[in-house]
Image 1 (cartoon, rainbow, N blue to C red):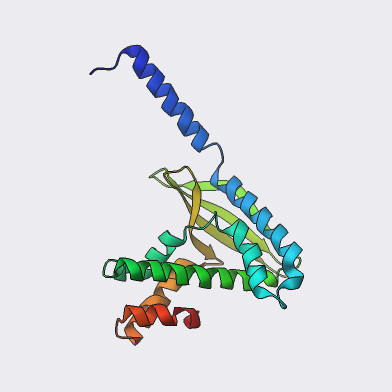
Image 2 (cartoon, one colour):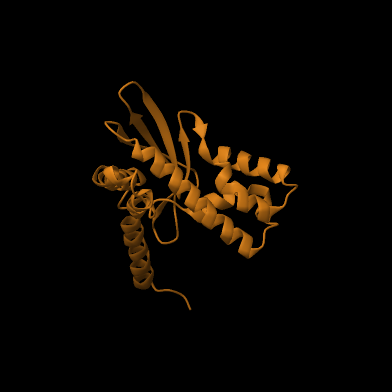
Length: 201
């Protein structure tokens, strides 16, 4: 059935409205909002880190969870080994990777004192349209570290973090190299690699 001009116009403008709604918050604005919540959580809970690190981790994880696509990152870390893994192995590594990433992040933030994270409003869009690079600066008392977040917009219209580059160090690539190294050491025994992943980080 052919659409009439009126039907086509209504469909076009409804899609246009939906798209503008999805993109109403830029990736840099979203990152800045999340980081503001994280810094607040750090400052409120910093004193409990040594006595109750699990509670500190829980407090930091709450604002961080919506930002990070743990499934996508863990898949990229597994790289060429992802296709050969079964569903249970993929889910187990995702679970283990999420835990190690959050623990590493929380340990770093536990030392957060007068540092400042500045999110630039400038972004770099990809040719695909659903990916953007967000630029940040981590300012300490002695040095400024540049950082880049690779973000993508999922089907639900949510910005998700899929990689981080800090001071020239690509964390996604670093994790993948560690995973490949473990696979080589353990003669490509994926179950053993997953089991040993936590102690390797």
